[in-house]
Image (cartoon, rainbow, N blue to C red):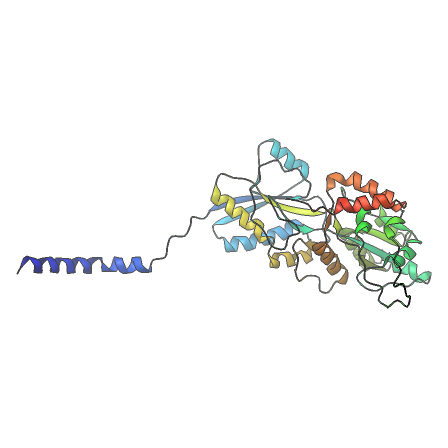
Length: 368
């Protein structure tokens, strides 16, 4: 046999020998990027109460979903007070992910978060993922006894509010927060009937310029029937509903107040040299903003931080509170609480300049 024939036979045998490997390599998928495998720590620091199940329970449900999607990653949730977290930071201890009220001083360096759709501002190192809100609660029993009509709908017009306020006004809020600026963002439905005046509908009175009342302990005052109007948070609305069901509160009607809130819960990721670990933490932070997660906030009686969430369809008041927050949020910083209270009380005494300044202060959105 000629040498060329030997060579071709050898080549054919070699090709037959390596062909299985060639076929497998053709169908083999490219290697996936390396993913983090291990434990992430999540600290939850709460500065205000929800109006239903806890924010920690909400986070636990999100952890279950996240771990199902990321089977090699586990998240350990730890609930701390602000003082406990500050002490841990001072000792050089930090989590991988941290949930905290807006305004809390987070000591560790935070990682840059990716842009998120439908947020009221562009995030840098924090996403807001839930809001509290304020409302106006009217004692309908007291109004009925005096022949004052109850206004139907999601909001109450200023003239009706001032009529009810003649029977007393009180304010309440969560510790460290204030409901006093709520009327600076007061929103309400149109009059509902055409004006027969050639000059059009007259400008409604500004309720925020004449609402002086009891600044503290408003819930107790309202429950005792000593005031017909309570301006308070979602939490006090929850408590009025609970007590009414037990026969411990008067009949009531709640209205949305506007887009003001100083109750904002944030989520951040602590900076870490391990890029895979940090990316795994960022995926969890982003998960909190998905529509499915945000719809779950109805169990807490609080409000989504992103717009366009289908929520509270059977609760006109809370639906309106969410809509106003998502469309025109006026976010107050807790560190400015004393200044906000001062401007609000001046406005309630009729100081239009103070009211204008208060609205300007609230119109600048929070930043992560």
